[in-house]
Image (cartoon, rainbow, N blue to C red):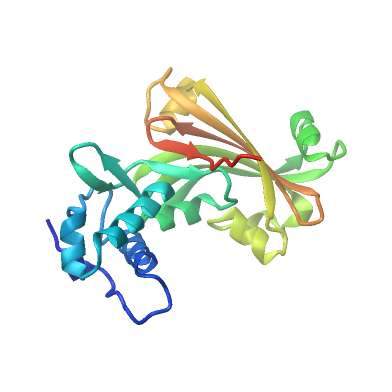
Length: 246
């Protein structure tokens, strides 16, 4: 097992940032840079404390935070591991690419279609648009490294982008450049069984358990800009949300 002291950014006891947060940041960076890969085991907490010359309380607090983020997973009787499953925080409005990079995975997409058109009745109702309003549609498969994670079907109001071709790899990056990136969204999660077409796109079997996430994204002025439907294999993705009492 590799010594963490050899692969992590050194901790600075004189920094204003608490040691446990420094350790979290160092482990997070190691995951992002693939120094630590999915399913890699971390040394025991006591060993980490000795190697880094910090207290076990510091190590435990750092790891607990990364477990809550979904970057690490605890396995009873085995220790702490870099998570191989993807956890998506429902409370954070981030793009797929941002989520994957934060977990040390390489995001990329295979475009199925890029289309110009006008709103369908479903889109018109969801986006609050009049019939005939121009929209752009983007259909693609989203990958983490070489594994297909989702089949995404997104509709964007055409007036929020310069052109259909302005979207290269990231819809959100193109919207941000145009000053129209969503600042809030409503998301709905539903369990389903994958159809034959969906299963083929996701390297699954027809009838396998899947998840459908519908997202409606809004601009700061309250206008809807994005309506998307993303289909996921349920064995690769977890959706989490933090709840608090009123």
